Structure formats: structure tokens, C-alpha cells
Length: 347
Ligand SMILES: [Zn+2]
Ligand SMILES: [Zn+2]
Image (tube, rainbow, N blue to C red):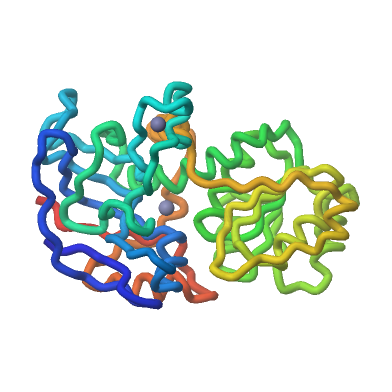
């Protein structure tokens, strides 16, 4: 069967992989739709990490059960998605408290994560039974593949407990920043501003109603303009979705004293924080990755109930054989794409 794997810096290739074999435990699935994630792009940029070997990419997906393995509640033909985090042991302290994403015996997640089990960017995919989730009939393949990135931002924003009317600043208008802004509105923010240099992505967020105001990241007067937009007081929360130094420092300057700044963006280059303004502003800096298993399930329900529109971030379909071009497209600084999904032939 065909699948895609990162083979070097800015190189992803379609290769032949052995079919996953039934073992009575793993759930074997046929893959229908897989999203390309921003984290895939970082690893593609790097090509390798010291002492790590990349496995097949793919962790945002819509799947069809072929062999339910140990899952007695599933049958062939059921439509599912799966949590791409490491399967929890179910026995350690965090597992017993239902904090499965903090399992002490975890190894690594599927997909692009170095040395992890092979991801779902392939015709067939095998995963641990505890990670598989049924999806409602009303949910499209694309919505199901959107659950994973949507859950990351649901978790990042929900945990900040934004109060009604508070002011939120988002850096970056890619998939992560767009979902951050959308959830900030959902959780009651009174004013959401976005800083973005890519005109298409910024204006799309404005048009979609994710944000109230857009600011150009290249504007030398950015900080005074952001402060003016909050009546001189500064923002209550910032979500940094780019991993770059300038936005992190801008967040400190544009937030009020004691604000919460959550870092979700990543970069292969070290980000630098100017400490003097940070000392004066005393923000709480948080780092966020992934979601709890409960949050993943909540997002499936919210999408199914049409409480959150994930399809506004969907750009286009793509073919597996052209995957290299999709990565190149998403890395263009002026790209008009946000989320590209690879569609596999239906059987
Ligand atoms: Zn992802
Ligand atoms: Zn555990």
C-alpha cells in the first residue's frame, strides 16, 4: 500500500509500506481523509532530528474500520477517527485520574512524531483500540479530520477561563490562530484582534467573523495601535500561534499587567524574549500542546451538534501522489491555503 514519509529537509515521498496485519488487538482501518498539520510542516522543514527517525506522517483523519481488533463495540464499515496521542497504560497515577494525555508510560504519538508508530497518511492504518472514536453519520470525513486540530485549540482556549467581554489577542492566522480566535469568541471574549502578515489569511479571519479587527504584523506602529484598540489598557489574554520572537515580545507589550500569554506556535529556531518589559508586565507564560481525551470527545460532540463550524478553515482536497506540492504550497508566506486534506480513493 502507498503512504507518505518525510525523507529529508523539505522532502516528503510516497513509498510502499506493508499492510497492517490483524492481531486481535489493534483496530485496522481503511483511510479516507487525512489533514496536513502545521507540525508536519516543521518536521518537513527540518528533515530530521538528532538520533530520531521519522515515521509515516498523518494524524488528523477520517477512517473506516476493517478489523475491529479488541473493540467488541465496533464492526467492519464503521466510520471512526482516532486520537493520535500515545495509547495510555491505564495503570499509572495520571491514568487513574483520567489524565490519559499525561500517562507516565507514554512513548510517542503516531504520525510525524519521531520514532512513533506509523501515521495515517496511507491507504490503511492500525491503531490502539483505546484511541478509536466513532463518528456520527451526520459528520463529514473532512469534519472528522478536523477534530484533532480543533481539539488542540479548544483545550488551549477553554483552560484560560476567559470571562465575558475580555479582550484577546491572537498572533498568526493559519489553522492554529484561526481556531484560537474562533474559540475565544465561543468562550465569550468581547473583542478578538489578530496580528498577521499574510493578507489573505488575516482578511479571511475577519470575513469569517473569527476576529473583530486585523493588524498588520509588519506595521512599525503595531504596539501603540494594539494598545489604542484596548483603550490603552492592554489585552487580557494572548495566544501566540507563530513560534517567532517578534510576536512573543509584542504580546508582552500589548497585554495588561498580569495577563496570560499562551504559546502554541512552534519553530525550529529559538525564540527570544526581552526580559525587562516582561518583568514590568509580569505576564503568566503558558505552553500548550494537544488536549485531554475528554476534550477530544467534547469536540466531536460540538462539531456534530453544529456548535462550531470547522469547515470554514478547509481549503481544498489533494492527491497523495502530489503531497510534496501541498507542503510547498502551505509553506509559502503568501499562501491562500489554511487546511489541505489528502483524499484517498473510497472503496
Ligand atoms: Zn495536527
Ligand atoms: Zn499511564
